[in-house]
Amino acid sequence: MNILITGGAGFIGAHLCKRLLKDNNVVICVDNFITGRKDNIRDLLNEPNFRLISHDISQPLYIDDDLDWVMHFASPASPRGYLRFPIKTLKVGTLGTHNCLGIAKSKHAKFFLASTSEIYGDPLIHPQPEEYFGNVNPIGPRSCYDEAKRAAEAMVFAYQKQHNIDMRVVRIFNTYGPLMRADDGRVISNLICQALTNNDLTVYGNGLQTRSFCFIDDLIEGIIKFMQVDFSGPLNLGNPDEITILNLAERIIKISGSSSSIKFLSLPEDDPKQRRPDITKAKKILNWQPRVSLEEGLKRTIAWFKQNL
Image (cartoon, rainbow, N blue to C red; front, side, top):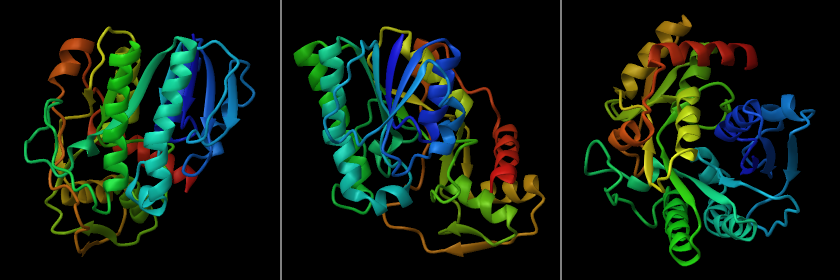
């Protein structure tokens, strides 16, 4: 297949490019490198079935090639990224989604939107099923990301209804693994980098807020399976094993052999207190569930950071 991936040099996008190339597809990667990194895809640049287009997908893009899929993964996705680029985040979620849908429509291609668990906001229902509408502050510090993704989902379903686009919407929960940016502000990369440099691990609030972390290989497998079924979504993909941030910090110190201590800081505004996916639909429709334990995933991620810090 011929597949266009926006944000293909980002953390998840780069892993997806590699997997799709491994499956003998032709991949066109579009990225403007605001938060993506060319190092993530450097090993692909000489691959005959890979092409890189340096472009901001918030601006119109014309593609000569026939396409089977347009997969929209472009967006700052960590708090540090979208708080630094709030307008660009809103643009890529709205204008970028519109441009990608236009490409898919003109090429009669299927469309895949990478949405997020952030559309649930600070959830009042736990765990979060796809039917939950969320508890989102529309003008808060995180709203540029949350509302951009909510608008993107609305646009994709409108295109399905009006133009009969064959589409998929995946809601991605906290994902981690090799290729994460050391400076992206995500909790796992933050804590690992602090542990490996023997600095204090910063935990916000009392550390009893929870997250559920999915290793990147499991997420990519879920995305591939989602492409192969006749179901539009939205569909949660994530690991339902829940852990407190304090417990996570303690595990990272232990696995990395760090001499770091834990330092508590004030909790950021609108930081969700709980986050855990209900993956009942993914299990039933995709026959998918995460296989990599947090212990194993952290070992592999820490090993990668040791080599790349």
